[in-house]
Structure formats: structure tokens, C-alpha cells
Length: 83
Image (cartoon, rainbow, N blue to C red; front, side, top):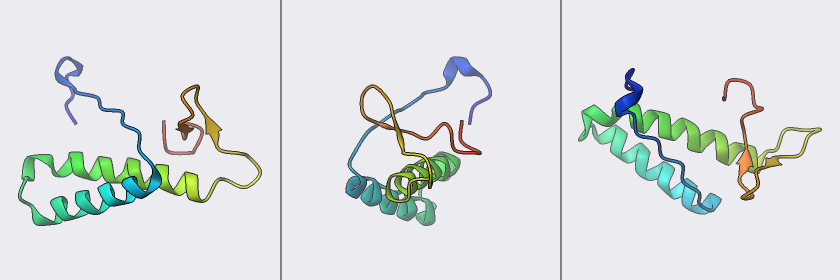
């Protein structure tokens, strides 16, 4: 990712788990194709974010419910390694 925050683009999207899985499959295919080498790290980061988000919804941490933000999104910031 870019070190200079002035040119960094942020994208926060929401979708049902089924669409998240489909997007994850698409990202895997794009990354494996190596057709977009400059986006390899971006694809990798997107895959990680999607995988964590899907896992938290499907396997909520035991003993604590999945936190939801005001717009009903799963809040995964409390999971170790994910800020």
C-alpha cells in the first residue's frame, strides 16, 4: 500500500456473505492470473479482509456476540490482528 496518505484510496463496501464468497473467488482468480501485477498486494489485502469478515459472521467468537455497528455491519476491530 502507498506510504503517502495523500494518494491513498479507501474503499469500504458491504454485501451479503454469498456475494462476499463470490468476490473472494474472483479475487483469487485475478491474483492467480497475474494479469494485473501492480494490483497483486491490493488483491491479497482484499482477500484477507473478506476472509476475516466472512469467518467472523460464520464462526462468531465463542462467548461474545459479533458486534454490529450502527449500520448493522459486523465490527471485527476487536479481533486480534485486525485494526
